[in-house]
Image 1 (tube, rainbow, N blue to C red):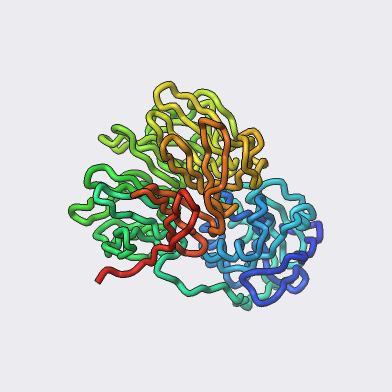
Image 2 (cartoon, rainbow, N blue to C red):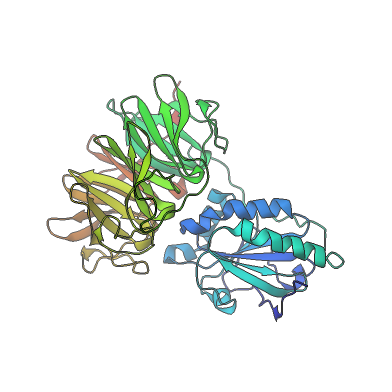
Length: 473
């Protein structure tokens, strides 16, 4: 019989519960199969298993209870409000307990994000699994538990009080670019669509129905799943359709959406695997075109990919696939959830989010360097000399006159790295997870993702002016 031998530690902490109107305990969940998901919201691998958890919750809704245990990596991830925003962003429908002090993490012997723990209906631990591929790994065990404990299972479904928020015009806005006429394309990622705006904030066009999905067609028919970075090539708008693991292609002249690369499935390749053959993107987060190539920040596989714009085939470009901060030659170097791209000449700048680092790739000689950042667990909010400076999960980057402007996302700030002096300073603060930067007409446009706003920042004063988004009449 598939029976646990160790009593599951209770799941109470001093930091409270979210996505529910009450606390829960292992004891009162007796009669249910319980799955604990140890996660931290900035971790792309944790985000990858959300669809698996939703699938399990639906398949076993009469006997399974999923509880999220949020054991934060970054300081900004320990706050109930930022966890709540992540719950809304990812559409999580189960309770989440805030394990900010790692009490439950330690009690359950967890070592990595994500880790799931399965508990039988008598409150004993059956086992745990670290990493992705949760559905295929866990589903057979839940089926066995359902059969073996059928006489003691509680089949009454528990309906949790789930967080809801009014959806403003923008909902978790992400990346932005401009066209040659000065119009702006903005990823309205929470609404699964792309907005074309003029500089007054009027919506000129909407690309995507707003429904979550993966379908091609006209602007009103096409669906996306959390789109982020974009790039323009003549009359084609490419979109990093992150949670569909795809690059979408918008024919701006004929107003049609198609899929240039990706099947919807996660694709993995490490070290020397598949270096000369086409691959699929893995949670692509940002795009940048240079000459006849489009570079892709493939956050989910910790690599930079390259699409040949003539063939639209995607190849590995930089990164071994290991999650680490390692410089060197293209395939020896390692990245940490790269999430933003910019370019100065033949040098790519990468916002390497999980290492809170800024990386560079010399496209011509194939060398990766780190002008700012130290490692996966070195983060903070420190300006000054680059040897002392610290960021916290930076996601966006922009180049202005050889200076590197950074969306220091979890610090809620915009900072600038002066490469001539090797110093960093804060331009403005008070943002809510700024995601991207765009320099246009002397202003720095910034998405404040968790406050669902778009701002223009004066570079000389740091003053912010909100851009009101309206439907153009």
